[in-house]
Image (tube, rainbow, N blue to C red; front, side, top):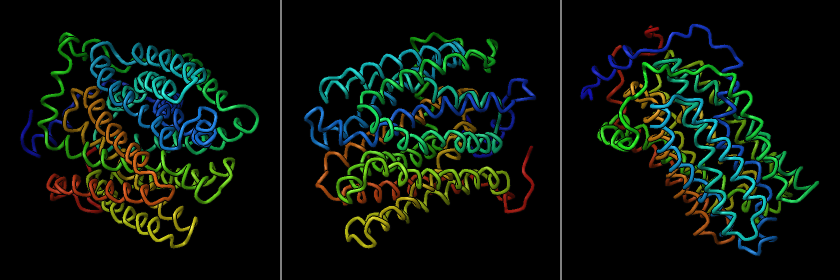
Length: 422
């Protein structure tokens, strides 16, 4: 493993990329759909969380643990699918994951207790994680360096349609049918994605695959855990994602119960945050080749810290009421456009020859941190938005602290307006 910044940069530039000069928008659309499984699996049922609690006789805090359960399965699943994808290619493992996702979604639809729902959410997440982790690796198979960060930002904008529409669609399904219909819808989404997946080319040729036995795959993570650049990126993204999943788990009860927003209108408020993410990702895609992914990651991390403190202040004092809470949460959510793609691209650039495993480790740490964020919101629930604000503030500060050491990796010649390598 290279020890210096110069060696890391040289490794990233020299990393082989499969010969694929044309990557049409059909391929990018399918990759976006696969990356969106993490969002659609949660966002579609958000408006139904209070109704699920009433139907299953569970408290709001218990139902919020369905988000934490999902994140447990999602984090553990990535650790398995990443090394498998480096050894067996990308398409086969993704197809297996989609089938498992459909099985888990059906189990959620049939669950008779809150604890059964939590268990099936874990199974659902184990399947969903395959498409997410390996679609990110496929981006690294096709692109490198700042170009990879640019394409990840573009994909995130496209896949943001899922969480943008998810709560609204979920609210309408809930109006026309029961909450169980939402999970049956996810069964259909998982199975319907199999067809387009099979039209994708395999992006990891056999000659580039890891030939070590899968039984020793977890040993692949040890060198990555010692790579400071990888861990700084994973830490910045992880702390931020803990705040984002606190947002996902906490806003249904803050908006619907505390501020008495109708479930059907919750989706519109949630969409405001997703709109901010899309705008920031579009800006990131345009700016990353000029300023570099590290500079933009630092800007996003410190923006998350500042906006997180603002969320906490509003949640504690009630300043601005619902509008104040929505506005500050919008600022915090928008920082995803600068943090998520850039943290992943920088980590992949540090170890390009292990793209699947790096993607799995970064994703597992990010979503594993989300377990803590969503669980804290559920465990500290007191009927007010304050636990949500406190967790988001701590998450933003943690992201800034982890990203700060990355400033040393910025090349002296990388200044605004400077030319960047192709």
